Image (cartoon, rainbow over all chains, first blue to last red):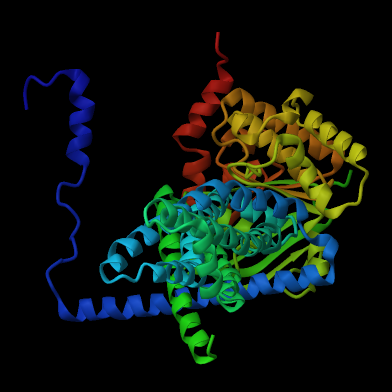
Length: 296
Length: 263
């Protein structure tokens, strides 16, 4: 080695001292036992996720019992603040989306039903579909995407910044301080938003009926009154608090699972929304079976 | 003020902590005396922070006992445990201030939860604590996101002191601070310890803090305490890690810095 400037000598020596041979990498070719092991691992992981959700449900339940025993320990300020965020501030977007969906269902109904002269039944379809299924399902999905994700991100970043540990070391239970008010806010907000969504969708349907379907609002209302009964509304509304509970529990459980990295925060937020929407739809299916079997 | 060495306030016996199959603490024992400032040092990943978090109950232990104020935390009822938790304050590495509350509300938070005080009185205590840690009352209305690193640590210390604790746990209190702020923080800690009779359990990497404020130093290595005593013991120790830490390049540079002050 000649002509090496003194300035670079140190760097040259340092490079010379580093290991040149990369450490053995595990071979990554297709391997049957390894992929079977992967299937097994993800099955166990799935089981763990279910127990994680049940655990969170239990902890929220325990916190609720604690509040019932000592109502003064309940964080009313936090509940009101969360209600403002997940209910009041969600009103415009929920109303707009459900209104549009109501319009679209009615428009599609008139377009296709007209071919065999069944215009009248569009109202039945819009009414029953919106009140029983679409209203609550759409609102639940919107709320999972809007509020569930923000719960996960908030709790996750609090976990990352050790705020949750700080609460715990001050002798307080993070579940009753942070999670209970959030979950309760959702359980109150979702039925209210669902009712609003149903009204907006029916209004949208009515608007399309008069502008596009050539049906006067009086006839639309009269048909709606015939098609719908209180039972339909009960079926729709009864599902709302359960869906809210699922969204809240999933969002909070995922939030607490965030580890120290920004990537993990993003991953858990995505998982929270995907799981919440999946479970809401599964729950809707279970309710459909239940209501069919009791004849509602 | 009680003299160090008079009474054991934290007693850790044969504690074992593991994550999966990786053992972090392996039969570790340590005593902290009332009124002393103990500095806990160790290499990265040696389990210093894990030990602190195990003592305050954030990480479960597999074996061993931990007694604080003479009570085994895993054996007492929840309300007794809460009583103990009121008597310690914790400064986390990054402050862990509640980001949705402003500085004043952060300091008031422990008092709001544990004490039944009139609003005005609580507010004036919070301002007093803020002044005690060397911050202007004007800071009180700022949000944690608007604070510098040094201010965040001071506010977090004020919050840790809100309930007038007997012990404060500090996780790397001077990391990320410039040497001047770190020096001020050390001086502040010394003053508070003298005036309030605090016991301080401090995880640190800062040789200056170890020299200037710590009464005793404990070194964690391989999941155990390998050295425990005042600075003079550390300098005399023959343990290879302890020797390279306290007599290593940075330590010698520090000696030079002190011996030859900047012009």
